[in-house]
Image 1 (tube, one colour):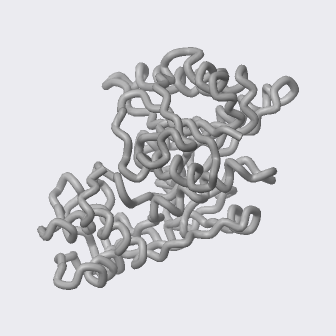
Image 2 (tube, rainbow, N blue to C red):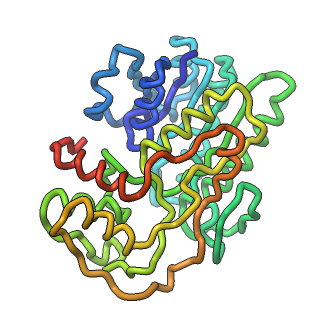
Length: 321
């Protein structure tokens, strides 16, 4: 069995490629813009892992890769970036890439596509936890949530329409926030705290990141290796009873909890947080994971303190990427 991971050199993608390789699976990591291989993937290149350039904006590109390697599965994690400042052009480019992916996979005889949706589906809901069947609002204040909602409807409609002529299963993976090695944008709080602790300086709490965090604000975050393990589990499962699965820890962690974990891993480190909760706080705002745990047996292996300690140790080793 060979699996293609689109965006396989990206943040979640590279961890997913490693998870497949460590399980003895053959995996093809596709990339368009990035050619830099994360350090933890280097031992696997040529030893279960192959890298292919693939531009999803080109019709037939994913079909060619799938046929070349005899792939029967695709994990779609390639980031659909904002294409332009024109919202109409943005929709066209992103939808074209999605249709090229599914048309190419169907033509190549791919049996299962697991694609990366996320918890932004539920961004407008006042409280959680969020189950796979939790109704979502049709509004979309942020681009990721708007596109993910539209894609979920469209890709499952696509699969249903071709069910009579193509044996291709489509699975939506709603992934929580993710942190860990190779995360680069520093948008999430655990990554900024861990980088600051490793480098011995104060964390960046500037306004571009939302200012100083409130101690009681909560986050739905999962360590990258756990997310990768869940993705591998869904892709390789002999059969799946549903077409949508949440991936996460099924609990939130507060900013104060994160800071405590960093302090425990790096004695002497500290940071000032604002007291209380901000207006952004939502009770129990996390993805429920009963479906994936009950059906597949997957469970997150990393506690937040253990994950924080592991992440800081990785940063201490000098492996920026």
